[in-house]
Length: 197
Image (cartoon, rainbow, N blue to C red; front, side, top):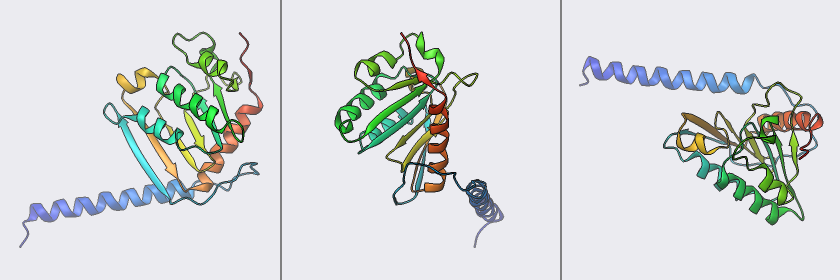
């Protein structure tokens, strides 16, 4: 026989679970169909993984996903000082560069930002564009092969890994959501220009 306290805990757990289901349903339901997108997404087993820093090893999770890229990586970033993420993007560019591409859109602050990995990536022939149309280009996303989306508060920086309270979502197998992010990336690419040094 269960005590009233145990019943109360079970009831709370059920309520929390139902709330999470409703939130996910509403979030997916709020996504309208994408406009025409030139990229295609392929079927992937749907999953959403959430990681929090400190302690979530967000940089390593991002690098692991970049290392799985086969044909395309699209990046939007505000801060870009993470050497491990830059190394992974450079390696991916060398690996898929003949048949695919890595392209990065950065906030204008990265022109002069101390520790920015922009120049290293440019020296390794990765196209990098200045998203100067918005006040601050504060998006933090990586789209891999049109089927994996990495997004969250996590700047691609050393501070995000070692000092800040941050989060990332790694979303796979949700083509409607990922297509919306691709379309947004293409919109920002359309008003961006190459960094001039």
